[in-house]
Length: 147
Image (cartoon, rainbow, N blue to C red):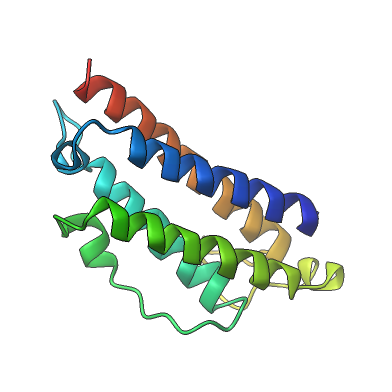
């Protein structure tokens, strides 16, 4: 399972990079439309912060201090900065997951994020689903803004 998750996270982090590159202008990264409140730039920052917190820091031991408020309210981060940050996330997620054992997956994750105990395997699957939920939002918003 760890090998598959590593491959899937790497593939989809590259998809995130491709989505950000597909925006015709950097300004569009920070725009919304209609009732949508989170820009693609903010969703990308959120995905970076989420993975760096829960996989890279908590599971892999990498230094990181999350600024969740900035993830949703910060503006104007250059696309190239986010692309470089995603490169770092790819390396750290890969290293973090490679450092886990199959036995660790069956252990309880130390924090109850959903009001009940969960295993590392459950939480990693949740993180992967969460990532792709927001990746789909970024894709949809980009197409809506550039139609």
